[in-house]
Length: 115
Length: 117
Image (cartoon, each protein chain N blue to C red):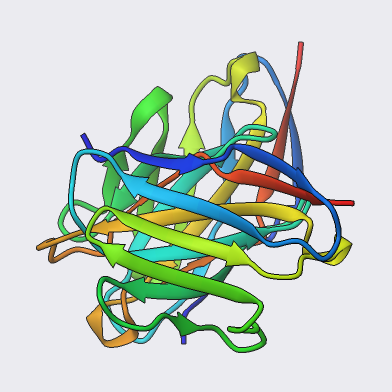
């Protein structure tokens, strides 16, 4: 079974500073990897995804993530954070057809942006 | 494209009543729909997987008689919380996987906030 670890429960960053959120996954095959963002009381918005190919993935809102197979990681980065980036961020790993394409989510990282 | 809606967005009910939540894929056909539950400040936990025309597959620890799932068409799945109790209060989110897709990509609905009094 697949699993995801997000080591940082809460990160506080100054507006304009860079942001990096860590994600480590466990999966026996080539993973499908995702980052989602959730504002309070809202659903999930997909930031970016990795299926195959280039290991550096560009997403929406200026986010990018790098897949590193050797480290089983898929860390999310943004060079300059805006106040509107304050939210909950979830990393997820997706199984293939053999496991009904299920998604497993990490515990999430809360990002606070200070002025 | 790939929009998923949920109805209602928010529902308050009395203990002992049943509540139905709808999940619709608006602009695509969904071979598989998933139901998740999210407690405050926690992650999403998969409750069940439903495929159109067949019985749902429930995750360990999820009561199938409590959470009835029907996936009657390629665009609609429903979750019915039967005899709801306060501990069933939660945020319920559905997702849908596009028919014919060879990738694991799910499109999420906006969620339904259930409060049981």
